[in-house]
Image 1 (cartoon, one colour):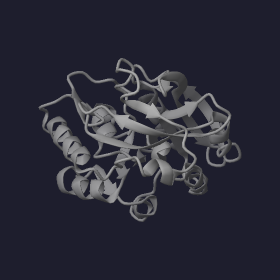
Image 2 (cartoon, rainbow, N blue to C red):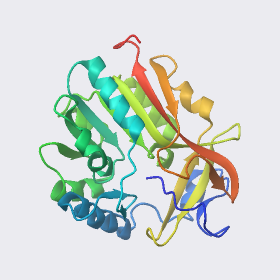
Image 3 (cartoon, rainbow, N blue to C red):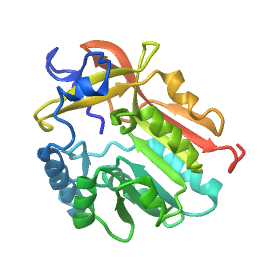
Length: 267
């Protein structure tokens, strides 16, 4: 989850702060994702979307108008065309199905086979209880998902930067040899190294703080240089994320990438 409500806040109050030398050091100052109010608010907001009482949810906040991820929709269509069959999608860190409900009207039978969210255990428990159906499924790990589904397209939207060891994860992700990888709303900084920060969320969203990485772009992209072709780089669909501030300075930004597996789809 990539929170976005900081651009007009007072300085030194909410947003991203610091340049920490280790995950343990920043974690000692953070609440983490286990805070109960996060999942409760997310669940309540998405139940409104599911029932039709609300239009759109992002980061637990309900909106009366959608912001469509146009790049995601376009590259889902391209991927289904290249694969020549409906896609089975793995949504890594996909909350309780936020993006699924956001793009659901575009998921035609020709495009879409299943939507499979891989999340933390407490999200999976709630997802299975309140949101899982014939099309939307929840799993504790990529391996658990692959035991039931043959995945074609992996979506990673504002999730990798919240992992303890993101580069280890990216190395393992490439080994799965998925057809298509789609990163959206991924955080980068202008320094020649990855930067580890503390993110403090405004209380009108929910009361929480947690570690957050800002990657060096070249290092991030190097994981995919052998097996994948970078087809497109694009800005975030959420207004205000093109430039992000760390310690109240505009030294970071958000980007998305679409990769195609060259061994499976020469492009």
